[in-house]
Length: 130
Length: 97
Length: 127
Image (cartoon, rainbow over all chains, first blue to last red; front, side, top):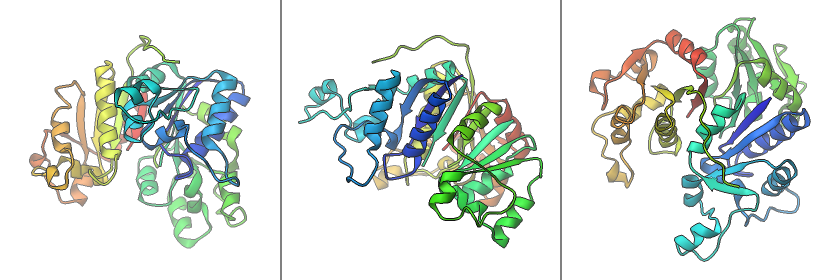
């Protein structure tokens, strides 16, 4: 079966990101397919390449990255949400003349239409909200 | 047949419960598991619901909060793969926050 | 890797807007998704309930708090082909509001009708 997961919460600030991660892992372990991970609003922060979690806490962006790479998952950060929160790929960092880019490898930035598209392709859409 | 998830024990839970149908199910996740704590107030909330409505709570969230042994009897505890299975057993999942 | 939009059968969306405007991004997010889904030719209805009703009040001067006026976005919903704009009867009564005084014409629906709408929609998102 095909799942899309919508993540509304930033890593560590709320439970949403970790719950979404564990649900996604379980779905994959059960043999299901992830159509898309869509990181929306505060969820965009999961796609940051600049998070440095304390040593005794789970590296949520890192775990997303590993999962995305292992299963070749389409991980999209909503563009409007990302910009507001300083999650910029190289093209946007250049475009807005910012001094760094911050999108974690494996993630891409795209519009809210990707969420609608994911809904159309998936058997189930599960949202993790704050 | 809808699976409703709730992650807080507040008015969002009340609103969710007010819109349930008998064939639906509720899954308490994250802080929502506090709504399963055995108290007079919580007992009233859940016993007022149709008994046909299935009630679930996430085992890891209960354990994290130290309330696994203090739950009302209405709930079945599930883990992540159980959540995945439930999401497929029901037609869609609605997250109430 | 960027992904392209695939053409699928149109789905029906019910957006449940139950957050007050201005305190968080929730109210805005609900409208953005409603508008985007409509732009992608999905059938979209939005139902305002609980604190979400506050989004519909006339006379919001959002710029007084340096915000974007949410009422203005709501008046654009029909223009962008959001199908139905609904309000929850019980919430209206509880907050002592009059839908005739909202920024936009709305249909008033009961909790039971909302249950039916929730069941019928392909996608239901709560904000």
